Image (tube, rainbow, N blue to C red; front, side):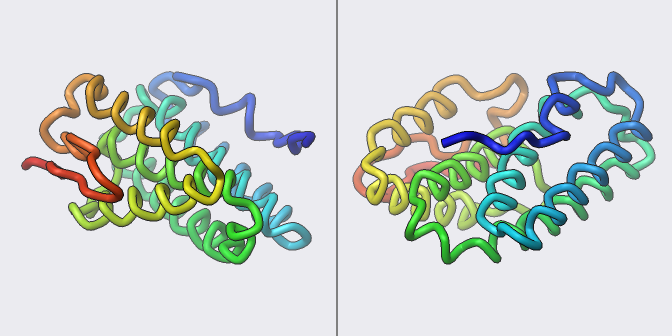
Length: 181
Protein backbone atom coordinates (compact mmCIF):
# COMPACT_ATOMS: atom_id res chain seq x y z
CA UNK A 1 0.00 0.00 0.00
CA UNK A 2 1.64 3.26 -1.06
CA UNK A 3 1.90 5.96 1.56
CA UNK A 4 0.64 9.46 1.04
CA UNK A 5 3.38 12.00 0.23
CA UNK A 6 2.79 14.21 3.27
CA UNK A 7 4.51 17.58 2.85
CA UNK A 8 5.03 17.93 6.60
CA UNK A 9 6.82 14.60 7.05
CA UNK A 10 10.41 15.75 6.27
CA UNK A 11 9.88 19.04 8.13
CA UNK A 12 9.36 17.30 11.48
CA UNK A 13 12.65 15.48 11.94
CA UNK A 14 14.35 15.31 15.36
CA UNK A 15 15.35 18.77 16.63
CA UNK A 16 14.28 20.32 13.33
CA UNK A 17 13.61 23.74 14.83
CA UNK A 18 16.43 24.13 17.33
CA UNK A 19 15.29 26.51 20.05
CA UNK A 20 13.12 28.73 17.81
CA UNK A 21 9.39 28.50 18.53
CA UNK A 22 8.02 30.71 15.72
CA UNK A 23 9.07 28.46 12.79
CA UNK A 24 7.86 25.42 14.74
CA UNK A 25 4.47 27.01 15.35
CA UNK A 26 4.13 27.92 11.68
CA UNK A 27 5.02 24.38 10.54
CA UNK A 28 2.53 22.86 12.98
CA UNK A 29 -0.24 25.08 11.61
CA UNK A 30 0.72 24.16 8.04
CA UNK A 31 0.75 20.44 8.85
CA UNK A 32 -2.66 20.57 10.50
CA UNK A 33 -4.03 22.51 7.51
CA UNK A 34 -2.64 19.86 5.14
CA UNK A 35 -4.24 17.08 7.16
CA UNK A 36 -7.58 18.93 7.35
CA UNK A 37 -7.51 19.40 3.58
CA UNK A 38 -7.06 15.64 3.05
CA UNK A 39 -9.83 14.97 5.59
CA UNK A 40 -12.37 16.58 3.27
CA UNK A 41 -12.06 13.74 0.77
CA UNK A 42 -10.43 10.85 2.70
CA UNK A 43 -11.00 10.84 6.48
CA UNK A 44 -9.09 7.59 7.03
CA UNK A 45 -6.00 8.87 5.23
CA UNK A 46 -6.24 12.13 7.18
CA UNK A 47 -6.36 10.15 10.43
CA UNK A 48 -3.18 8.33 9.40
CA UNK A 49 -1.57 11.72 8.74
CA UNK A 50 -2.75 12.95 12.14
CA UNK A 51 -1.17 9.97 13.87
CA UNK A 52 2.04 10.50 11.91
CA UNK A 53 2.21 14.15 12.94
CA UNK A 54 1.56 13.31 16.59
CA UNK A 55 4.38 10.75 16.44
CA UNK A 56 6.77 13.32 14.95
CA UNK A 57 5.89 16.29 17.17
CA UNK A 58 7.79 15.33 20.28
CA UNK A 59 11.19 14.63 18.70
CA UNK A 60 10.94 17.69 16.44
CA UNK A 61 10.05 20.06 19.29
CA UNK A 62 12.41 18.60 21.85
CA UNK A 63 14.68 21.66 22.10
CA UNK A 64 12.21 24.42 21.24
CA UNK A 65 12.07 27.25 23.80
CA UNK A 66 8.69 27.00 25.48
CA UNK A 67 9.14 29.74 28.06
CA UNK A 68 6.46 32.00 26.56
CA UNK A 69 3.87 29.22 26.43
CA UNK A 70 3.07 29.97 22.80
CA UNK A 71 4.35 26.66 21.46
CA UNK A 72 2.36 24.80 24.12
CA UNK A 73 -0.83 26.53 23.05
CA UNK A 74 -0.16 25.78 19.40
CA UNK A 75 0.56 22.12 20.14
CA UNK A 76 -2.55 21.79 22.32
CA UNK A 77 -4.77 23.29 19.62
CA UNK A 78 -3.18 21.04 17.00
CA UNK A 79 -3.69 17.93 19.15
CA UNK A 80 -7.33 18.89 19.69
CA UNK A 81 -7.88 19.24 15.95
CA UNK A 82 -5.97 16.05 15.16
CA UNK A 83 -7.90 13.99 17.71
CA UNK A 84 -11.14 15.23 16.14
CA UNK A 85 -9.89 14.04 12.75
CA UNK A 86 -8.88 10.68 14.20
CA UNK A 87 -12.25 10.40 15.93
CA UNK A 88 -14.07 11.15 12.67
CA UNK A 89 -12.28 8.22 11.05
CA UNK A 90 -13.08 5.87 13.93
CA UNK A 91 -15.59 3.91 11.84
CA UNK A 92 -12.72 2.85 9.63
CA UNK A 93 -10.80 1.21 12.46
CA UNK A 94 -12.93 -1.93 12.40
CA UNK A 95 -11.98 -2.29 8.74
CA UNK A 96 -8.38 -1.20 9.35
CA UNK A 97 -7.18 -2.63 12.69
CA UNK A 98 -3.51 -1.99 11.91
CA UNK A 99 -4.27 1.72 11.76
CA UNK A 100 -6.03 1.48 15.13
CA UNK A 101 -2.94 -0.22 16.59
CA UNK A 102 -0.71 2.52 15.17
CA UNK A 103 -2.95 5.24 16.62
CA UNK A 104 -3.10 3.51 20.01
CA UNK A 105 0.66 3.10 20.19
CA UNK A 106 1.12 6.76 19.28
CA UNK A 107 -1.20 7.76 22.15
CA UNK A 108 0.62 5.49 24.59
CA UNK A 109 4.03 6.75 23.53
CA UNK A 110 2.85 10.34 23.91
CA UNK A 111 1.86 9.53 27.49
CA UNK A 112 5.04 7.58 28.26
CA UNK A 113 7.13 10.51 27.06
CA UNK A 114 5.32 12.70 29.57
CA UNK A 115 3.36 14.96 27.25
CA UNK A 116 0.02 16.44 28.07
CA UNK A 117 -0.92 18.38 31.13
CA UNK A 118 -4.04 16.58 32.28
CA UNK A 119 -3.40 12.91 31.59
CA UNK A 120 -4.56 10.66 34.39
CA UNK A 121 -4.18 6.97 35.17
CA UNK A 122 -7.41 6.06 33.42
CA UNK A 123 -6.12 7.64 30.18
CA UNK A 124 -3.25 5.14 30.17
CA UNK A 125 -5.51 2.21 31.01
CA UNK A 126 -8.03 3.17 28.35
CA UNK A 127 -5.40 3.74 25.66
CA UNK A 128 -3.79 0.39 26.48
CA UNK A 129 -7.10 -1.50 26.50
CA UNK A 130 -8.20 -0.04 23.17
CA UNK A 131 -4.78 -0.70 21.63
CA UNK A 132 -4.84 -4.32 22.80
CA UNK A 133 -8.34 -4.83 21.32
CA UNK A 134 -7.14 -3.44 18.00
CA UNK A 135 -4.01 -5.59 18.21
CA UNK A 136 -6.17 -8.68 18.72
CA UNK A 137 -8.10 -7.84 15.55
CA UNK A 138 -4.83 -7.26 13.68
CA UNK A 139 -3.09 -10.32 15.14
CA UNK A 140 -0.36 -8.18 16.71
CA UNK A 141 -0.95 -8.60 20.46
CA UNK A 142 2.51 -9.86 21.33
CA UNK A 143 4.22 -7.16 19.26
CA UNK A 144 2.19 -4.46 21.00
CA UNK A 145 2.89 -5.88 24.45
CA UNK A 146 6.60 -6.12 23.60
CA UNK A 147 6.63 -2.47 22.50
CA UNK A 148 4.89 -1.33 25.69
CA UNK A 149 7.29 -3.38 27.82
CA UNK A 150 10.22 -1.76 25.99
CA UNK A 151 8.91 1.71 26.84
CA UNK A 152 8.37 0.70 30.46
CA UNK A 153 11.78 -0.91 30.90
CA UNK A 154 13.64 1.92 29.12
CA UNK A 155 11.69 5.12 29.79
CA UNK A 156 12.89 8.41 28.32
CA UNK A 157 15.46 10.14 30.49
CA UNK A 158 13.90 12.10 33.30
CA UNK A 159 10.44 10.65 32.74
CA UNK A 160 10.39 7.80 35.26
CA UNK A 161 8.31 9.59 37.92
CA UNK A 162 5.40 11.02 35.98
CA UNK A 163 5.27 8.39 33.31
CA UNK A 164 6.29 5.27 35.17
CA UNK A 165 3.08 4.19 33.53
CA UNK A 166 2.36 0.78 32.18
CA UNK A 167 4.91 -0.66 34.63
CA UNK A 168 3.96 -4.24 34.20
CA UNK A 169 1.63 -5.49 31.54
CA UNK A 170 0.04 -8.77 32.57
CA UNK A 171 -3.16 -10.51 31.61
CA UNK A 172 -5.45 -8.97 29.07
CA UNK A 173 -5.56 -5.32 30.11
CA UNK A 174 -4.14 -5.24 33.64
CA UNK A 175 -1.59 -2.52 34.21
CA UNK A 176 -0.04 -2.61 37.67
CA UNK A 177 1.47 0.82 38.08
CA UNK A 178 0.29 3.92 36.32
CA UNK A 179 1.65 7.42 36.81
CA UNK A 180 3.46 7.48 40.12
CA UNK A 181 3.45 11.08 41.19
